[in-house]
Length: 334
Image (cartoon, rainbow, N blue to C red; front, top):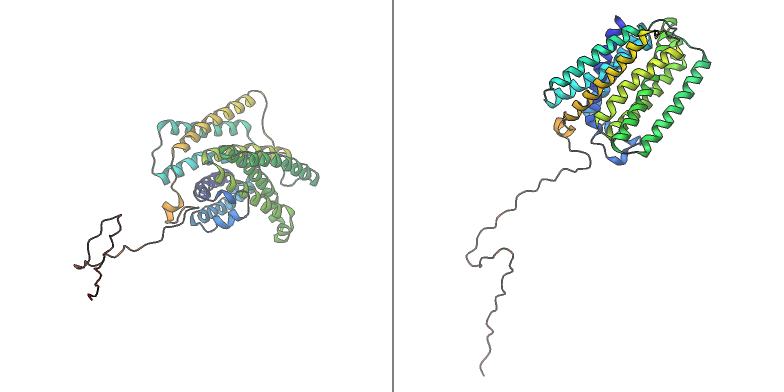
């Protein structure tokens, strides 16, 4: 129960962070895409820093959840992040959700609970042989290379979805490495800080964050969030089974129930994604009064002063030049 509780808190924090980061990244100049200068732009946005704060909170909750439960149980719970994201976005936009959206939220929640109850992830170890880690890292690297290549060669929502899936894989790897690193705390502080998994966790987390920010900049939250949420859950479950040898029940009718649950979750996520498209999230300029990217604030120009009327000068009509005044020439008489 402890792992489930902290997994839900992680999903809530991550969903809120996604909305805030989207608000900031959506105004980033296109020239900063796939450049580290994107971070230098975002770090000056208060709304993005608030999102990063929630990411830190989510990381602490996630570490606690992974320390008390298997990866194949904890990470799929993060599917709830998508409904949380929609609720937070609608709250910020002051929009009421239609009844169909609430039905989709219920469908995702019930299907997730039923699927996890049927799979009943359990067991597993906290450590894996180095050979298993090498194989897992090679497979992950190939997958990320393919996804990033697709993202670079596409534009708009297609790029956003590709980078979202890449970020999902990075998040799943981060969680897997984090579980192994946190388990070293039982041996003391020194083994924890000398474990290679700790620093690999930081590297994978930064890489996932980089892909996520580029995905949020490239397209809409609707394109990024579904592959980010579903991909994270499914890839994490694969890591749990292959790396930590966790047990997942897949025999007989249980497998049918799990497949039906995955299909129902997918249908619910599609409907939630459509609802996200109808939610307008205010831009940073609306929240903090900052000008949007690419726009310079207009300088304040004082109103021109009206000259005082002089009776000795003729009135001028707008758009016409005054006729010259010819003075009479005085000639001397001889």
